[in-house]
Image (cartoon, rainbow over all chains, first blue to last red):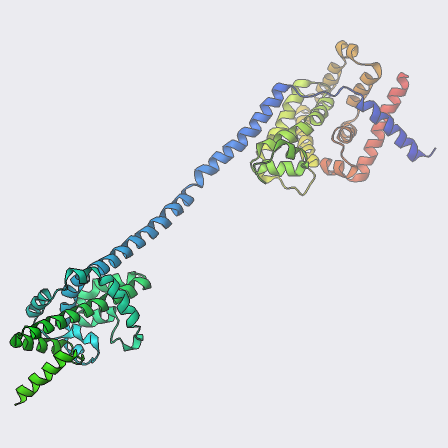
Length: 257
Length: 189
């Protein structure tokens, strides 16, 4: 037998004898002590991690929803105000613009020239109050705004100025806050506001036309003449309905004579 | 690794996976790991120290506490058993060093002598008892290599890594240890 195999045999013999020895184990008390220490170490690590980390997720959890909610509430309040109270806009904003930017109105032959009429503020306000749309018109203002928007799918180039631009030109100091508000609102909100303004103008014009038709029917020609003159100052190129147009020509020829 | 591992799935993991799981905060992984290695490590100390159970308990606990405290530094690049017995070997070396300055030889001999108590003789067969005594009588390096092989089932290379010597030295120490043990047993027969 070679020396190598002899050594292997000896090793195997000693190995078997060693494995036959009693297999001592640590006491259960020692086991518990070590296992408790191991669990405690993990638990303390988890607790210290939990103390350090929670602030960031909480901050994120608060900041994002609150900021979204704030944007939504502000946008909705602006849109609702403009949609539900178009006459307020017509009475308060438009006359202010008319007063402060008469020159710009003359340069524009399109409908929006109405807001730049050089009429006296008091007279305009009184007239507006007199010609305030009836309740049914107020209620349908929103629908009319939508229709007007669809009807007027005019290209943007035909609009003399966007609303923020118009406000800026009309009265820079007063329009600062309004302009900031406009810039902060979303593009959709801005479109809705423009639509509302257009609708409000149409309501005002239609009310004037209705009033003039009524005066014509009642044969109150003096008042009709006055109203028509004011109307022409605001809408110089507007094509009147047939009966009013005929009366206007007749009045003009009479004045020429 | 998920903290949702069940005890059954833990049993199927390797030592290295269990240690990584424990490092990542899964305490139950340590339970399995401890159950696998507590016996071998305990006997490694017990037979190095001449059956002084109190001292063996102390060193045994120190090793596990070191492992627990250093869990974040554990890397699975080495075999877990090698890692564990490396800590144990270092702790044992520290013990021998602290023992030697003051009449070390006498203290260590006393430890071995204490193992030869009449109670031990009464409870074990003569051959087994002789083997225990001869293991304790082996030179420290040979005894260490022998116990690492028998209790930890380490290969020559792993024993060399734990003890910091080359493979041939380990092989030589093991051969001398076995020869010496066998001679003592033959003399009894």
